[in-house]
Image (cartoon, rainbow, N blue to C red; front, side, top):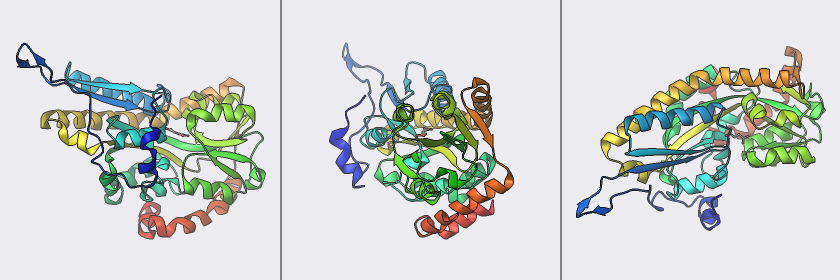
Length: 340
Ligand code: SIN
């Protein structure tokens, strides 16, 4: 794990600028009087397992880049929080310690409130609607909202829709009363859990399994692919099929690093990213459905299907969260997404 404590203060206060520290591990050493050809390394840590939508898309991106630029550009993908957690990767990217991230949109609260729209409960019914929003002018604008803070957005990647898991069947919000829910670093998710009477606890993904196992927390929300690959189904006897929210990723590079690349490489890497994005986003739904089947077949966790009446109680109970964040997110942006 990286030790990034020294950088923490600056980013916590949001005072970071893109000037931080530049950039990749590059070659360029003198060799017999001649300048050796420059090489580029893109360090790309992330927190999910290799078989998840993000894990697979990151590997596809690596293959495409290295096919295009053999011996010239290397993409080092570090899955499963091997190198660092998401919080640390935000700092590391802004300071040029790493070159690329794909961090959950829910984890950018301290940098921007614009991504909070993706956490509003029951706003997006499925990935198709999310994709339509992300492709719209309102969605594409979001790619640039934190470029002045060291994060140039290049793409959105999907994971999938979220489900609640818990120690008992949660058919109605009232069943969640008093339970400790792990959530990502998001004030909207905090308000969402408070709306159902739960006690929200912000925590890194890598700590959740043990916290569930030891009883430090009682419940959590996540996609099927994360519930399966992070083995939450082993320690959560019930998963409620609520599809109440979305997990997707902001794929970003450090702007100084990006602009330092020769134009042909930058264009080639961007093409590779666009191809990997289309490839990965097209399979995220299927990866989640396979993970759902794996959870069902494990016999360790029961899948609780809610009827329309029960789902509408969840929807109504969480509805005040929209109003609570309307000023921050922007009524127009919410209306544009809801209209889809
Ligand atoms: C992720 O999917 O990258 C993170 C999800 C989480 O922290 O629960």
